[in-house]
Amino acid sequence: MHVSRRSVLLAALAAGVPGCTSTTAPVLEELVLATGPDGAVFREIGGALASALSDELPATRVVERRTAASVENVRLLREGRVHLGLSSLDPLVDGALLSAEDPGGISAVGRLYDSFMQVAVPAGSPLRTLADLAGRVVSFGPSESGTEFTATRLLSLLGIGVDARRMEHAVAARQLAAGSLDAVLALTGIPTPAITDTLGTFPLRLLDLPEEAEKLAEAYPGPYVPATIPATTYGDLGPCHTFAVPNLLLARSSLDADVVEVVTRTVFTQSARIAAGHSEASRINVRTGIATGQVPLHKGAERWFRATKR
Picture (cartoon, rainbow, N blue to C red):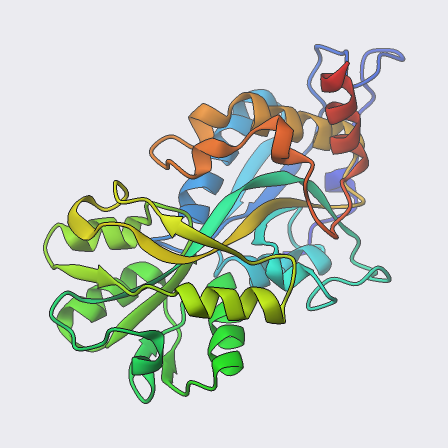
């Protein structure tokens, strides 16, 4: 259902008291947050954020909308079907999905944490490099996901052709263990639930991508940073060289600034609750929160960050 104009209007706050100093929560009929698929960190982080926002906005029905993730979330925001959504940064830069003239009007609440590209194969697989995936059956994540966007961009850049399948990470991990897939690509936070859960019953290995990471960063400057998944992330798998992409929490620019101020405060003051169980997501903090790249901060987020710096 399309988000109605009425659902994003606020009742007046206590007479003339600014949102940054009021102890009265804004009144909003409904707040819809687009998250992600099963087996991905977006889904878990988004669910925890929705729960926290329900506490902060007791008069508002906070709805978590499960999605394919980044690309779908941006589309839903532009169409006015959700108020908030999680997205990796790379589909938002260079006009890939977001334009300064975009009538949908999308702004950033803040930068959250980084996602890492993870290429998982069975431990006994002969596949050792990304080039070895040529001609293989590979999961690119769900359609309209950040994984699909980045995997398509990466393999196209390197000229690697695969038999790409679209499915949720949890489903892909089960098919990998069953022998129906040769590899699973997942651009998500760490540890990734789909990988962690599979390791309990089926041994996996992650492919190192040091050269591929450098080529991607050179071809598309800005969103991609060569990075290492720490050895402690997945038990005995050891460190993995790959690349990381920042994640943002986005909002409709038309969403009232008082509401977005509450959302921003919740994200950055309750980050321990929201990121529980995810080491990388625990890096959510005010210092890096304003680093949203080409995506401008929402007016409500700007107000909260300015007040916090005083």
